[in-house]
Length: 84
Image (cartoon, rainbow, N blue to C red; front, top):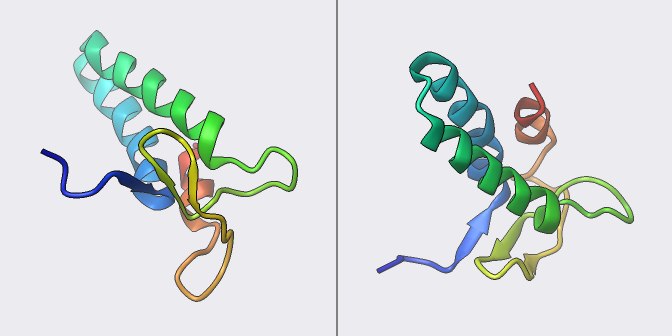
């Protein structure tokens, strides 16, 4: 049972390079599959393809929960780290 049905941008961003690092170290193909699925979700639902940047949060089904892309608790740090 999930505690919540929404996803925040920063754990999703942090998860991308973490999964790739784990895959590089272990060679476990399931980690590359997890990365591919997470990246596909993020790039399809979190990114505002019209105006740029990532939305703050989405529901599990991909619909946007919080469309803010900046503020006191949201900056580009995590999205930049996700691109390495």
